[in-house]
Length: 293
Ligand SMILES: [Mn+2]
Image (tube, rainbow, N blue to C red; front, side, top):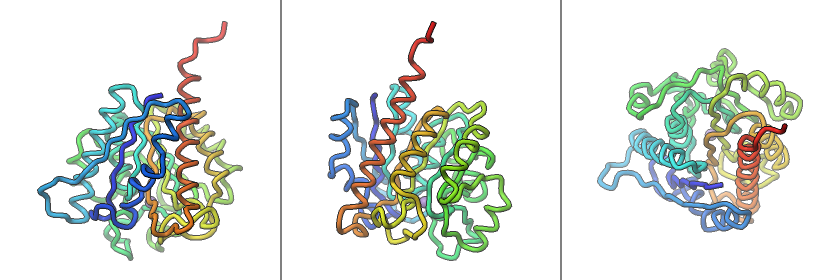
């Protein structure tokens, strides 16, 4: 399979800082070579914020989102699978949704809801609003400036593994049509959730905020909280998703190498990236296979 590895090395408009260091850390740790070793053709593209621009958290996030959308569209037009490595969730998710064009299903792994809005956030972190922005709950004028972006209906979205929500954010999620699968319910609930959300799906975006992992699997960033999924859980779930929905694009986000002095979280991230690509490739092969007579 041809893979376009799209790196977005920013966190809150800062290049290479905190989670912004994650994408290039994973590239240096050998992700492109590991993918090539298992038979894939890999092209790496590192996206940059506009060279002349003033850095502002919100504006830069949307500049990067437009760049991701273009890179995803380019990759898909050549038949490559876009795999985004991003410091933040918002540019990755909004960019992939826009790049996919048609209204996708979204499977969103995250310890957090990313469902805050400017009116509910306690931390003031734009990226904690990423999923709410995707659904059109906030930042609607800025989102409208992303070519081909259309808000995704909440009923097309599944949030998996979330366990650390602000109070008003939790209330908004509970009242929304976003389906939630709690960490402890993953294996029991995912098959039926996929059966219902997958009906008629044309493109699916898989969002893997690495802090969905339990910190015992490696501490991926300063916001990681206990009660999360194991590496085996995530690998199983990604395999199940790829087997039942047509994966159009995927992202790995929020890895901060500074939180991971032993390298355990980096190992987990590499293993999950390889597992995700294997699952996407298997599913593509199954689709391309001639019907059995
Ligand atoms: Mn997130």
